[in-house]
Length: 238
Ligand code: ATP
Image (cartoon, rainbow, N blue to C red; front, side, top):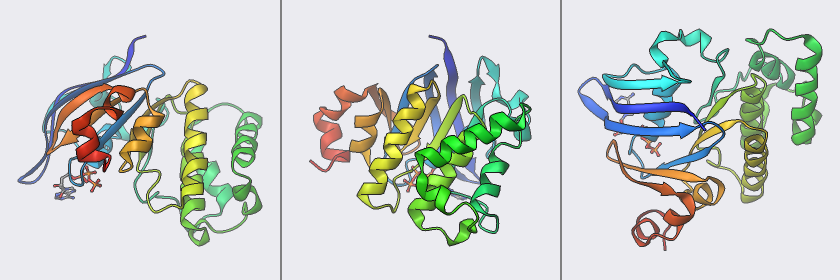
């Protein structure tokens, strides 16, 4: 399988603060890859850069074989790149349905296909269906996370970037969200998952990168990392 994403010696800074200090990694078409690491390691910065929200100071990002910088920010979603940001970023003054419609804004296929996808989201998350007309800002944290993921899926992404989907959620909701993530992956969507919950991330994904201080310090098959003593000590609380 070819690489959907290839990152070479990426550096990203916030003014004088170097958040990413030379990072290389790749994601193959259809893969589920986790990015784990301690607070401040640079995981969110990495996702924001991939989503075009931050400009690299150096390095190369190839998305589907072409430089990411050659795609305008507003066009990234149309090219299949979607981010579910940390803190969710839903439109709180719009209803659940309106949020989902916004997710599909870049699509050029017909209304029926979009409606079918919306029904699919409501099927996966009946909670959202019951609240279709409710303002998104009044949803619970878990419901907002469900909406954020559904909204991203409405764009029919090829590569979905997920930032901390488990954050602040009750275990049963986390389970449901991760079930959905696995289903989405089965349907062929490529996933890059940033997670504080390293164990869950490694149990879910095929491959993983461990970040520390703006660099990748370890990489490999998720199952292997799950049983790696250093990883267990540093990230799995074992
Ligand atoms: P967490 O798990 O805590 O969310 P993270 O791995 O996602 O951490 P980042 O949010 O990418 O880490 O932060 C990486 C580094 O960049 C940190 O040292 C952070 O303080 C710094 N940083 C992040 N955003 C900014 C900003 N807007 N301005 C200055 N420094 C920033």
